[in-house]
Amino acid sequence: MIVRAAFFCVLLVGVGLGQSNKPKPGPVLDSSTAVRIAEAALIRVYGERQIASERPFTATLKGDVWTVAGTLHCSDGKGGTTTVCAGGVAIVRIGKGNGRILSMIHEK
Image 1: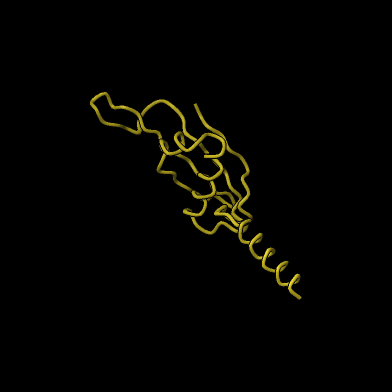
Image 2: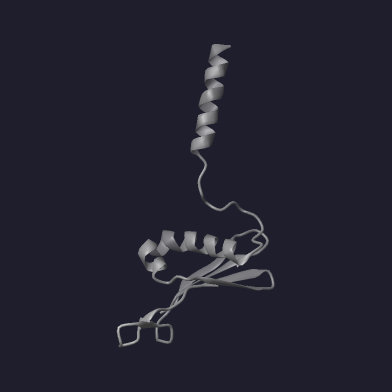
């Protein structure tokens, strides 16, 4: 009986340690969820610093695909920034029905 109780406690602790903040697979019903999924994937590939520099991200839904894109920030030459400039941002396409990443690119 004691062995069973100990096993059960170890099992519960192990299950609890395996949990993470990673979004669970399933339908992506709103733009904020699409952005969270995209940012998590992009940070793994491009790093937190690069992705932070492209915030805010916007998500648009067309059919069953969310397209999430970053915002380009460039110097305006006067000490400020502008979003009208040459360069590229990260773009992620996510399936609405299952939350899977369909494509991920970073423009130049």
